Image (tube, rainbow, N blue to C red; front, side):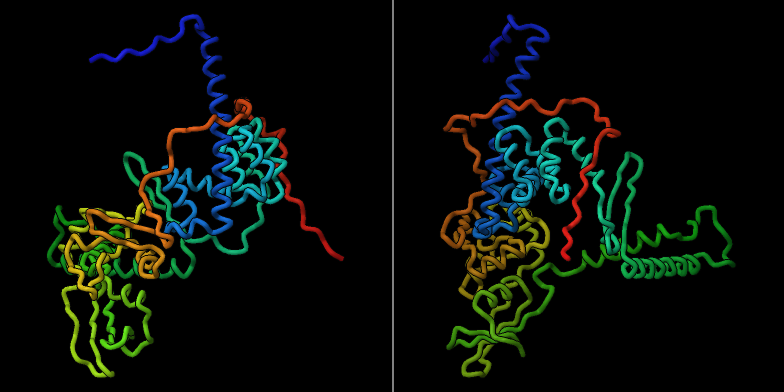
Amino acid sequence: MSVTYPPAPMEVPGAKRVDVLFEELSELAGQRNAIDGRIVEIVAEMDRDGLWGMTGARSVAAVVAWKLGCSPGNAQTITTVAGRLGEFPRCGARLREGRLSLDQVGVIAARAGDGSDAHYEQLARYATVSQLRTAIKGEPRPKPDRRPPPAIGKTSTDEATCWRITLAPPQAATFEAALASHREALIAQWKHDHRADSGESESAPPMPDTMDAFMRLIEAGWDAEATARPHAAHTTVVVHLDVDKPAAALHLGPLLTEGDRQYLTCDATCEVWFEREGRPIGAGRTTRTINRRLRRALEHRHPCCAVPGCGATRGLHAHHIRHWEHGGPTELMNLILLCPYHHREHHRGEITITGDADHLTVTDRDGAILLPGSLARPPTTAPPDVAPYPGPTGERAQWMWCTPFQPQPPPTTN
């Protein structure tokens, strides 16, 4: 079987062929920009009216990434533009007309100051995304009135990896005390193993330094995490359940709603005491807890949250599809993994989970089925009728002639 491709038109050679392709790119880019502008308006409406909350997603950006099938970075750009669409009406209008790209408006919406709509709408007609970033960096910024937040950064090369840690004074003091404690323990152990009267050996390791202490600190935390019980068994919950009434209460604590009771007893070390007229009559089954082997099987089968479009992989809770207290078995077919957010949403009634692990159905509070696929489909209407997008000029920016945007001082009232 052979595949033949249509030959390129030979009557338009050389530079003229490039001009034809550039014209087509310009036309397609204008249509794409106009479509992105409409997407931004839809996202802004969903955010303004809180419509995204009924989908069970964690944020507007998560809904956009889910429904458009785009990356989290592109979804965040769309959400950022939608969030400041009211502050940048001229840039938003140019995006809808196809005269500016989503990335250009996204840079402006992410960092530009208030009142700079007209300034950057003019500049964005000729400037690339990188040039817009440089221009926005030239804006005068108010001095922060507090210390920079803690942060961790990493730079990697083929030879080594450099970590940069920024800590506030209290956190730095805790870190330094922990590091000093591990260093002193290493030095004490080294002196015990290499006493002065035993003589030095050529193969003896050198005295531990700060790097050794840091690695010991990391390994100690890692060992503690490895030996810790799974998320399910971090706490022991004691619940008193009256068999004659649909009510339960924490031991020496308040009454629980049905959703809270099921959430607490879904995947935790829990003692359920059945009572009648305030007197204990027995304890519940103990096979509800998901052991390590069963949890590993769950993680191997589906390592992320079972709710379509979520994708969370850390801190997941094991959940009984048919609840344990309703006779649901602690078996793979009746167990799924949920992130803490969607686990709470399920027990609050915001989302419903039915079926079994292989045929799972997740619906929102209106009964609509949540599907993992995006909304993308072949177009059935004509493309937007907009002018071709010429794009930035591509010339080198002469920053000495560029006037940065100057925020206007707030009006004074006498």
